[in-house]
Image (tube, rainbow, N blue to C red; front, side):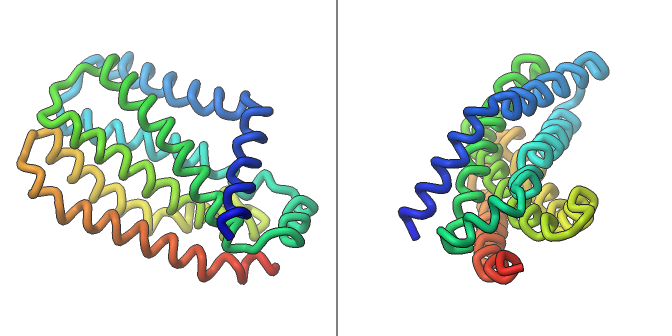
Length: 217
């Protein structure tokens, strides 16, 4: 299992490197969205600053992860099916998307903080919130992308399936990061960290249980 996951993650990285336009396009989308928001608002209050950042991250993660399974041809999926297990495939997708989202998150928060200057009470804890949120986005959207890829109109189905899951997740992330922005004691955010950890564990567990049945189709 470990060797299969390692090989598939390496494969994802090689394919991404060969088609660098995909990653560059996502980064361009992220940077241009932040800059357009800056031109539109110029200056916003801390609450809006925090909410706007997570909205930008939400749409960036959808664009980055939606292609996880949708761009895989049936022939390639059949080839993977003959070589690896379904659990290795979904785990490799989650791991790669987590790495991709961490890269996007660090880029986004750095550029966003430079363009939209705002005082953060606890910068380190805010960065932790951003990284945890990126992992959550990656795990949730990877699972939903795998489910939606089996339908004909996968893009629309992914949006519909992700809505009930991503809204509560986004609310917890906004509250968690707002506590860090206000510089509150870190123990105040332990409940939010526990909820995010539980969501990630549940999503990954469900992915491992459900995806093998989808993979057989």
